[in-house]
Image 1: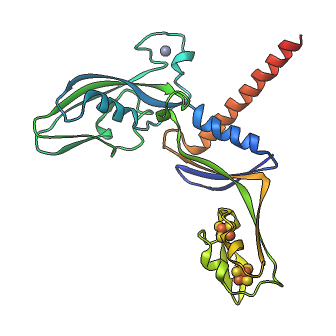
Image 2: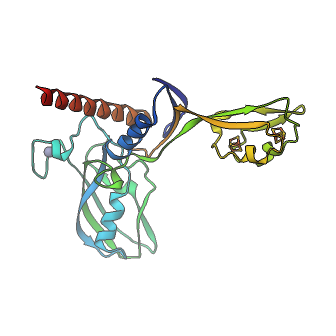
Length: 268
Ligand code: SF4
Ligand code: SF4
Ligand SMILES: [Zn+2]
């Protein structure tokens, strides 16, 4: 199997997996969504809340704030030996105290006071609640590692999708260079230059086959390579996208090893 990076930036990673099968690609996607842990607020103690939001709605909003996640220094609560509250290996605390001195004050994620500077909201500008003059909230929030299979708020990605590698072929002798396929393509894959059709960016093709249907001359054919997959990952900002994929592969390998040793023990 080969891996080729197509593009990447702070929160996005696009890469191609070659010489593999759909079972592997889908297992990787599912592990990314369901098994790579992130740190998220999971418990809130409301000390005072005169805001218009009910306590549980306030807690729910806090739980949906993505936190930068330090996977090296924290342990999943179910894997931690402490079995109790206040453990610094599996839990950390945020506090928030705010009273509005004027009308319409918005309390943002950046106002959460944190215990560990490596685990903070990915953005300071996520609105939590709007307060009228004199309204006040005081709370403590506890974050811990968790996985998407337990609750979607732990998913490390906002997008994790793959598609087969597209193959677009033109038959030059049949093509009349009418440009209809260029017009209809929603992804800008094709171009008409000097009275001939060019394939500009085949990886952008969504395999919709609109060009094939539009061509009266049967001059364009769209197919896919079912052993190559283009992955598109958008991190929520918790771990960076490369780390999400690395973790997913580690988890995958661990599962394969466990299965192997289970099979070996059944034989003996
Ligand atoms: S629609 Fe068919 S004939 Fe027209 S430019 Fe495209 S491939 Fe050529
Ligand atoms: S299959 Fe769809 S996206 Fe791909 S080249 Fe044809 S029209 Fe464009
Ligand atoms: Zn613990």
